[in-house]
Length: 233
Length: 229
Image 1 (cartoon, each protein chain N blue to C red):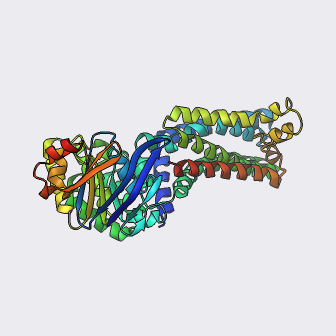
Image 2: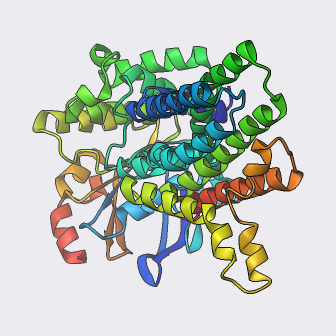
Image 3: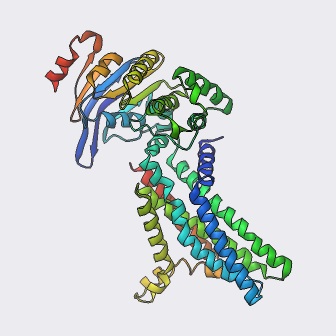
């Protein structure tokens, strides 16, 4: 097993035995499950659009709590020095933490897939928006985790890391609203930074490479910057 | 085994180390002696590759710590002063993690854990969670993780800090037993500690190397230290 594999195994163990992970998972599944049941019985329409938007909000709010420990805790406990003096590259440390957090979110999304199964059993849902919605949620999770890890790498205070990540995520969320106040071409640039603007098309079943590119690019940039923070010590 | 050539380290504009040149022979125990803030930890962190020098170069077992960091780090076992350990892990899990991280195979890791736990007397707590261990046992775990991959060089930052007298004596004996098989660089601000464990002593003050002496040839290290500082 490579060093990346060893690190990933350690991070998966730490993630899946953390009480924070179970708190995040419980809140996520309880709230979305409640909303799914309520909307299904009230509207009797076989789609998950409303649930996907709620999951979007839940991820924006919960992921910073999940990622705040990533590096802040390692710094506080001085274990980061142990990792950075072992023969492993900084990028492997970052990727291991990223993949472990992503594995947790994907597990939650897989569990929430029972909603789609219920719709499939008792109705005839349009599957394109459902596939698109789940793809969007995975891409959104990648970006939120990467942002959370970046802020966690900058401080040893977990609350500061979580609050900063939440602040950045909220600013990206509302970027489209701010764009209306800005002159051309700044408005276009800010509009294209919008988190929700690149999420909604997926949920309506429209897959655009530009939307996926937005998440992939910003996630890669945040992971790159996190690696740079670790390297520049 | 270790070559330090004209090494300077600046934190911003503040010099932590100034033009240090020093060699350490294979199997030797070198003690870095100096008051707090003299640059001992910075020098050790430069050797481990945790920090990069502002000027000069460090060669560890033939590998440049900046140009060949991975190769250099494989030769080193490092025990930082703060004893960083993953408290949620069991001792054996932690040692296995550190061994695998340094490239040991699963089979070799099992043998290596048995060997180091015997050497630092950890057998009775191998399955205990690290968070339940005393400071003395944590120190042993920290030393065991540094030895698990049989490094050529062992770097210890203030290894007897916070230990009770018995643990200090045990740690001292352990370091002396490692000498010969392993090149050891340790730091301390306690003169008697360095005197009892090291073959040579390098005296640092405000980032400058004031002198290097062989302990056996220096009957009154205290007087020398006072005269230099």
